[in-house]
Length: 616
Image (cartoon, rainbow, N blue to C red; front, side, top):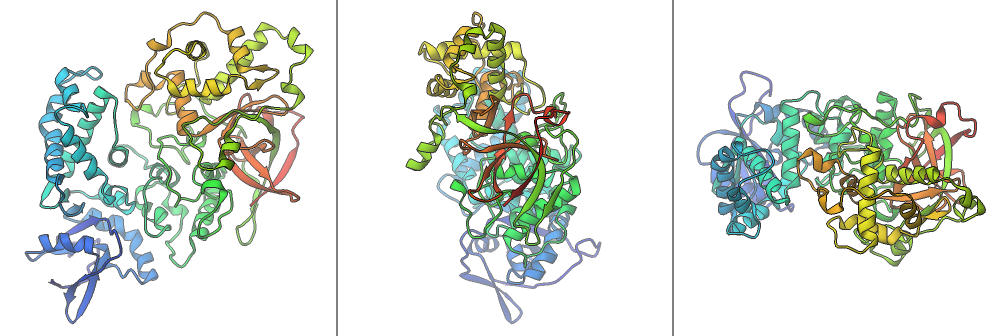
């Protein structure tokens, strides 16, 4: 294989028509090369198979492994800011998924059908209820099962989760997706994805989050302004990978609204330096500490940091994390310095978290950036924690012990005579507080609106009633949680006693409630059961109480004795863990504290004194 290597200015009219190639490198095998003059340029085996098929006529091509000297960090740093322009300028972008398999042709043929004939039929169907022929085609167990299986295997190929390919795909003007000798165009593929989503709405099964998420980014990039923040996009692509952990950040700079926060790419800097400086730059630019809350999710298991040590308050973006549209409370749409990837129709909001009001962060960083000192207040100390239910499967005996129910021991939660004089209204207030905790006081999947107390209490009552009576129910996650925690103590009573003595007759029956799912019908995302699923299962949070009786929702890895604080400049409270015999703290994660999410602790309460936290 022979070729010519030449340099052209990417923004010049003199630049000839060229094709760009988007592909996954795979294993670093270089058994082949392109002869350029008297030199040979090694190329990855994954790329060679495509070039062997396509380079049969004279044309210009751009591929990163050939056109960028991967051994030269300075050249890579220079090329990274140009990647967006390169793929935007390409006459055509070829996505190469790899060589054909036994069923890849069947998968592409089915996708072409879904994006053409089926799409036209689908557009004419009602928005929620679909005719029987669509339900039959959508069934994973029907006559089309082999086609769905083929599509699923095609979607498991590495290209879909290589983080560099996201920008390459989004900014390209003309796209062809190839596998072996067969292809589908970008526009037809996008329609096929929408058709698959319609099938999902008809059957309630969807397994293609990486593809759908890419489609949502494309929609936001092409239609809706502004582009997402870098932090939101990093979280949304939490299950994407890069060979170099620094590229988890650098690969996305062409798609975000705040790329200037990074400065110029620098491959001489360590991963730890890049990730830590990103946090510092975010705090300096936005005057907010919300970014540190992403260390709630992006942290190594059991607090062990791989390869390079990161401070606990720095998100480790190289850790694979299941993506969520709204992964954290600080991702709320009301705060655009982070924001989220919610669809355009869900952009209106009527509620926001503002635990520190408009107080700006008061922070300082050590010279080596290993320590951040922040002013704030201590709200309370964790006392009792509910059990982490069986959907979060523990892997060690130590984790099983940690995840077990821990009853509170402070006097605020012990049965006393004052319980005899506690009014029925006080019990109602406690139950409503529990309800707000379990849904983070939000009505909807995108956290735009406050929880409706009357309706959510009614739905909670129905779920508790059926879980108590042992009836089969479709909301298995709530049933599992309640049965594990019904005797958890809250202000002197257990949850079982509180619920039984407080609830009015149940309306409606739990069997009449919509089932929580990923379906796009808005009503199905605005039930108590769906919000509980978001909070306890997806966001991995556990119900807890503090020494002085506050009710909270905290990260699963929290422990008895952890400190709940409000750091100035952070829109939600956080959990910190004090190191023994030191004045230093480990950051654990964001938390919900009922009654203190909107500045109540900073609006004149004399019980809270300012404290300086040294986070390491």
